[in-house]
Length: 188
Image 1 (spheres, one colour):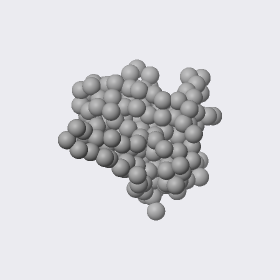
Image 2 (cartoon, rainbow, N blue to C red; image 1 turned 135 degrees about the vertical axis):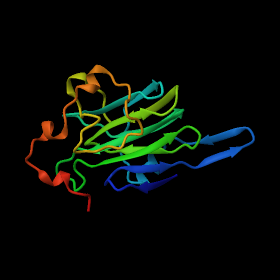
Image 3 (tube, rainbow, N blue to C red; image 1 turned 180 degrees about the vertical axis):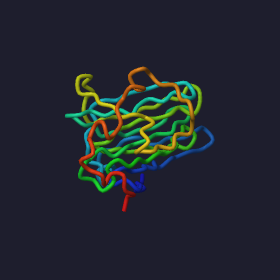
Image 4 (cartoon, rainbow, N blue to C red; image 1 turned 45 degrees about the vertical axis):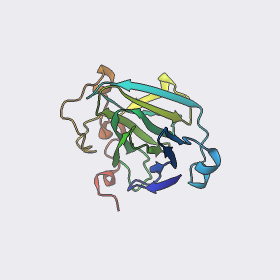
């Protein structure tokens, strides 16, 4: 198992070791000691399993007072998975990272606490499993507009299918105000 750093500090691509032959394959999807050696020392306390049709966009979600680190992987189909940095003291505040995850080439995305998370299903019957470091609390949920022009996520779909709730989320400026103009500058 190895980690690949991304342009956003703390967000990691996790490449598992796959043992395959004519029968199929085997891989470890979580091993606390190996993950700790990669710099991921979180205890995951909740698993979420989501199934979506092609073109469904879920997110961008976050917890306000009890942020969750997430370990995301695709079980079937493929998805464009996105993390947006909401940590005000981060040099990447307001920046996003996206990656296609798919079942045929297993790779995981680790997203630390302090991020909004969302994904777009690229195929029918796309299933995601993501482990969370804290339990979900509906009273603590927040969201970020999927199409916030200041964040500028390049979703691979022009007219995704969203829930009414996800369509109504505020922009980064609405959430944080104009107190920090630096989040509109490029990541250095």
